[in-house]
Image (cartoon, rainbow, N blue to C red):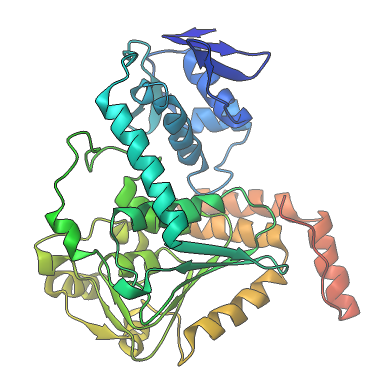
Length: 387
């Protein structure tokens, strides 16, 4: 099938332009093929779920958006990122999108910057990911000399760490912490002095599915299919506060220093916080925290709704909770997270159906049967990886 300058090859389940193959994941190819069937027409997310996923509901948080983002990044390597357009509640294939066939300075700069960024992350290990035999992944923000402050390389490294776990069936829970004296001090103020790249995406560009880069650094943790537990100590300001808010559970030191800091710099919180704080903080309380950017302690954070537990050793407590979750049916845990992520957006009727659909997907399956057998025998369960 022809899709503008692209040729879609059904036999190889891949696409190419000028003999350069994109190395598409089967889901990415199916998504591109579906959009190419009706070029220039918007296809709703619901239609994509039915036609590509063969499901009546989202199989994981923003999973359609995640695959669209990955498809765009592969199209960008041949100058066709603009070919997939976000249009309202769906996506559209722009068959008239021009092919950037020149060895343009823009793409050279992006490729050089990406390579340099990857080299920097490897050299400095801005973020480390360790996966234990128990299925617990420990993600550490690792810029302790700057209290894990967020500069461009840190943004990229955090997003890469989160997205690397997206498809891991063997990971049952994630612990997110910061090395050194703090969890994350927020935006590295030296970034204010940086001259923006002329070709840098606009804030309104959805470069990561439903999010821009700055939102993805916090929302990726909510999008992961498995629970995420943040262990917060020291300073947790601004962007750090929003990253912690992306976790399912927050374990905080009593003397942690926390603030929704953006107003101090004349800005609004724009890293996904407003979406992530729904259901956590009372509306008038959140308004006061945002408008004044006042600092509060870990102890007060629990009263406000921004901390789940307060303890002198938040990392130890986070690992303890993670160990417990890792001993639960991973299919049921992931299904429960999907339900939690939908509960603030769906109608009561839709949530009742969602519960039934999720339950039907786990009941009488091997892991659910193993949970019953292990409980009756008073032994540790032996689950297989998540479906």
